[in-house]
Image (cartoon, rainbow, N blue to C red; front, side):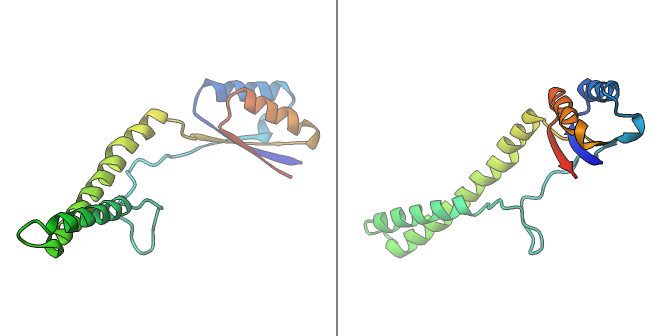
Length: 153
């Protein structure tokens, strides 16, 4: 016996896939559908020591801070406070500006892209069948727009 796992959006395509599987000889007792609960809260932008998601809010700030520190130090030779103070002011200003850019990008633009994309797995479908029917079952699932499939022997 083979188990085939697949994920679907909750739609009529899921119902059609289940009906077609039943027509192909897979009994109702060998089909198991599990609805998922998707995340409703937003992801945290600031990482803790135990939880990091790979998003860095300081990388753009560090790059802009370095660039503006160089510009501030070179322009500071002509200004009253001198190159050291203007280099530090440029570094701090560039870092804060870069962090603000990243915050805007991840809070506004990425959130809109996630909402527009909207392809969330909402149902896991588990089918148990003989190995001879496994290819047919996967073909039916792909035909009815499964988001992903996996076969466990």
